[in-house]
Image (cartoon, rainbow, N blue to C red; front, side, top):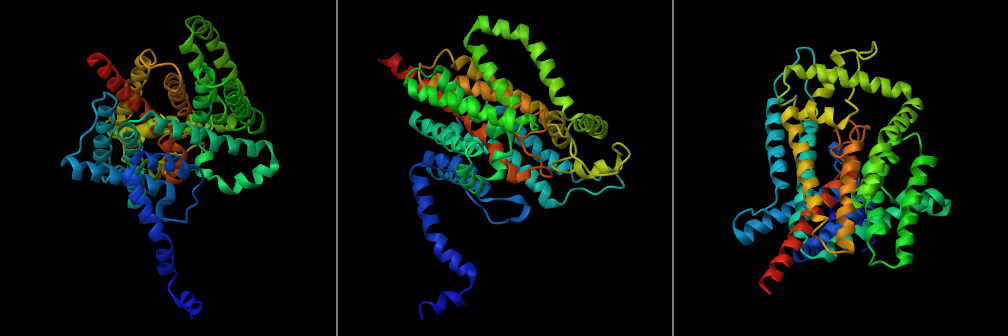
Length: 437
């Protein structure tokens, strides 16, 4: 009888019976130790499988939403209101959310007579990407109050990612990692950029690690760059933003090196640009055409753009190289302009400036070891992220490109940037204790 019942029971009911109890237990554990959920989120983003869900939603994205909801509910239940930490980095993100919502509302206007708007689920998906990015940043900024959790997040990410890189170099490992790691995470430049930035920062600056540990981290960096530059060279986003990250970390550490790199940077930039374009001239030419067309469209509503996802369907009215087809801008910043206008892009750049200034100040305040290495690594990762936006890669994925699936990798910079606010809060608490003692 026990064999027959499961065969006749509805599959959804069986799924609930099997999955629901451990899921509820997991929620209770996260409520008790919220930062543990952030460590689990890193794992979920990289390797958690997901069934096909509407709109590109996946298990990692749903887990992030769950963590955000639990955090907000916890604040409301415990404090009766939503309380945010005092940080200049938060204001531009809150304004960005407001601007994106207004752009979503304005996006319901028919801006062009012969083209329809994006489907509502696509518009909501585009809006949710902005909201989840902000939510990921705020989660880490508010829930990590013990440095060990930031260390767990960092080492888990580096360790798992290094295993994926090893899969490129050793086929027996690759047969496992190829089935385990999720394409939405590893096909995004954010994965490669932040792996190199964080690993190099710790290897270069964390003198509390022993020589073997630092050598291993340098090895991970070199292996990652080897994969990006030699084995996957056609994809420029796999090695150019990581190289920017390394250059920034080194330059920030030494004024003399910074001056030398400043003198050499124009020549290196010209060489890398020419090399990149030479290997894919047609692609770069069409991208430039796309930028010009989308910027021309924006004359209709430059302040707020066309709302999340909508401009994609308007592009068919403007032929690109003689073809009336839909296309995206192939540039993160023009994409943000097209969806949220000058106000939205202004908020993103404002945030980058504030988080960069926070890291710049923190580098002189934090003690040697993990914290200082993390701050430098994040500053390098920030500049690599900014650079990647020009290379058709996404820290805010576009719905009709890599979309919510690509937010597996897109959430990484927001999580680790939030760690700067955590370190700032931890440092302020330590300074306050010292001043009272």
